[in-house]
Image (tube, rainbow, N blue to C red; front, top):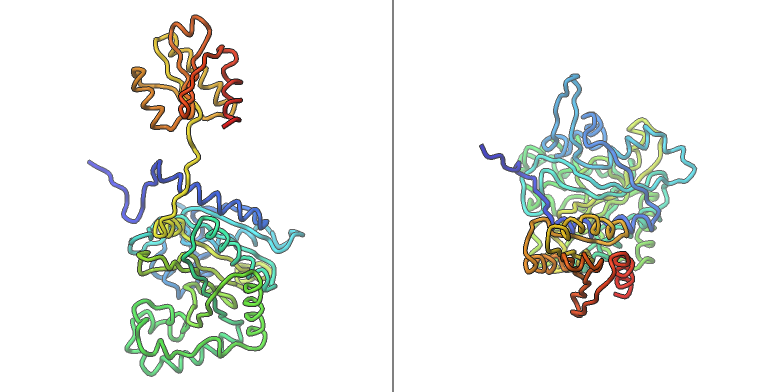
Length: 425
């Protein structure tokens, strides 16, 4: 019986995983520059966490979660997103008591959603995200957006667009909610079942519907920007002011609502505008979630964050034909001839690795010509050749693969000699 990989998952093989590592290094290095620290939460949590945190009216909770009952009869769910778990940890570990506020965190890891697999979208996918919890300053909104823009720009992406909106505070949302209900109610029967169920529960989610996005009522729907109270309007203006001060270009889109219930005030997405990227252009989404911490049993402190899919990040890189030089070349390949010489290279390659060099030897008992071919495939900078005669004379031949120069080196000085040559490269 053959066992194949489950639908909606993927194997990330050598040759590709290095690209992931490259982008992860960029993201983590920039997070550290911004003073964000890594947090790691469980892959599964109590189902109630996501029902309360993400929202009962969302597609994630209603249709996409991987939920199971454990042997103790508890309902558990593989995490579909990162924010709810980070906020749960913030509350449970009393991070609100940390004297350094806001608490600035980043995370990376697999998430799970049962949705239709398509290009750049999987049922198990890797998400990188940031959360800043504990500040109501609109400057932190601009900082979070600047951080993710820095990640994309540093990776080389140029054909991207930042879209922002304000979802307002509770008072603004209530006024907008009533206007949406009045707008959609007379013709709600023309919309899908999901939209019909959202009319009373969360009418703003209708604006996020993919099935009915071309309906004429969508284009004429009341804009949240027309219902912002003075505080919400001033807050949003301040965010835009800071973004402009940071030379970050953006477009205001009043139809941007995001797909999770916990968002309020600032909401944003970053889109790929690369030709051929696909119909779904969103690379990253985020926003402010004031009220979520208290909803999780913590104090009433605000928060803001974003998350992006690593798979879609890589797809955007490919769409823009961005290449980067692979720096993981082998420092030295040790080729040997004869049983005694081959035995001796076991310790020799270990000594090179202990000295901090990337080294390899032959494990297939191949002939010298085949060993040199292996060194070429590994892009070895140097090849060290050890035969029976060299071993008797306590010497080894070191060849520079770029210049072709060769020299004999005493075995006891081999590691030091190679290290000096590596420093000269």
